[in-house]
Image (tube, rainbow, N blue to C red; front, side, top):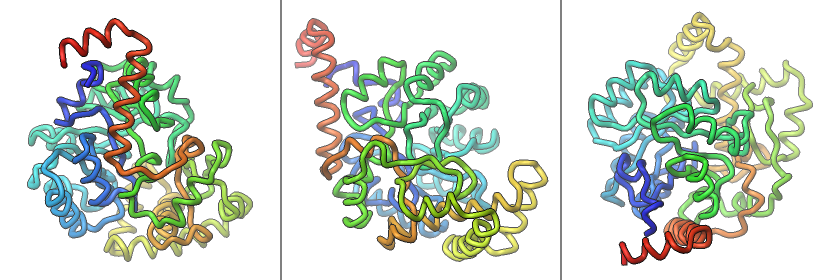
Length: 362
């Protein structure tokens, strides 16, 4: 492998390639996560839609499939986050990733136990804050990314963030191939993180009929909407999403109440715990009760598509790059192809450097 592709995160995570599979709810289970890690990247389990017991079983399954490092993605606002941190420490999970900013206490505990901490950010100031708090790396996701996403394009966000912090930065949003990996490195990143590209692989457990919808979606077939849970989220534009955008506030909150109850049952969170969590967040000014209720929409509507295979009543989170994905390789085929394309791109840009690399690493 070209030595340029051995970046800081390869050593930090203990992986062969600077390629991360993100923790997508209902998608990034044990099979996809282990396949990614076994192929040389960093697989990340999505635990936000799992109970603590389910996460424990998923970690055990990943370990039974691969001996290589992997990560777990968590929500810092879950009522049992400390128990999940304890589980990661006990099971010696290599990386803890977060969709939200972890607290200073969580960062300190994980770092003290040798667990790499890696939140996802969408702005330079967030990266600076996380570096100050002591995280080991950040994923900088640009506007092209799928699911909840920011407003700054990856091509602007990555160079801005890599100039601002000294910790490794992994680029996300719009990456699907080796040329993208080289571009991210040129921007100063230490690697790339991909969600949609891994969702569309053979090891992904998403129903084949749903994968077909993704493969047929053009670059212009996505939309960033706040109608699902009150926060900007990129999804495939469907009749259901358009109906959500036209619905009034009353209809949206009635739908949200139903999904909040369903999500409570799935995650085994008592209504009392849900209420206490909401009141605490409201008191701190982080989220109103209405916003907290709306937040249950995203996981339940995603579950309808990704697990039940019913996109007509669910949503399809996706990155904008879905429009350039045309097939379903295995995870190993995908990662090997990305590395090969990256090496070919580097050779094309600098033939002399490529020749020297081959001589040094025959």
